[in-house]
Length: 118
Image 1: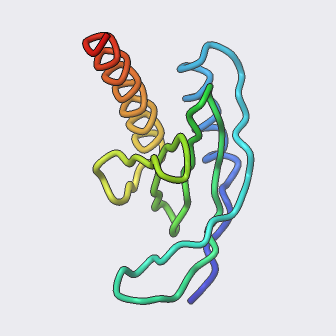
Image 2: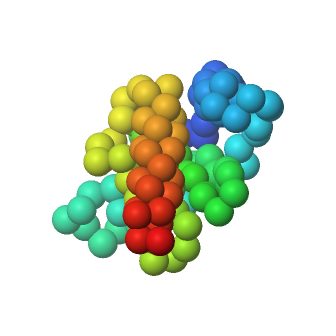
């Protein structure tokens, strides 16, 4: 399988601007790599460029799985991983905004649940 191209400067800018809008200050995600099974019917792992950042206890990743194709998730620990309900995006801005919104909704729901159990 051909290698996946790295994030471009435009893609990096898109994510950085979205994070800046969310957090109110500049934030630069770290470049990393992830090994994923791109085909669920294959055991082959593919090294994919990844953007990673953390906010509080939440960790976020956006993984580039092809030209103009992205997957994302946030997590709190090895056991607590969450997605957006969409397997793959073809619009990086939509991917980033949806990831941030789902995580914010998750935090709000968790706080509300804690308060109702008190």
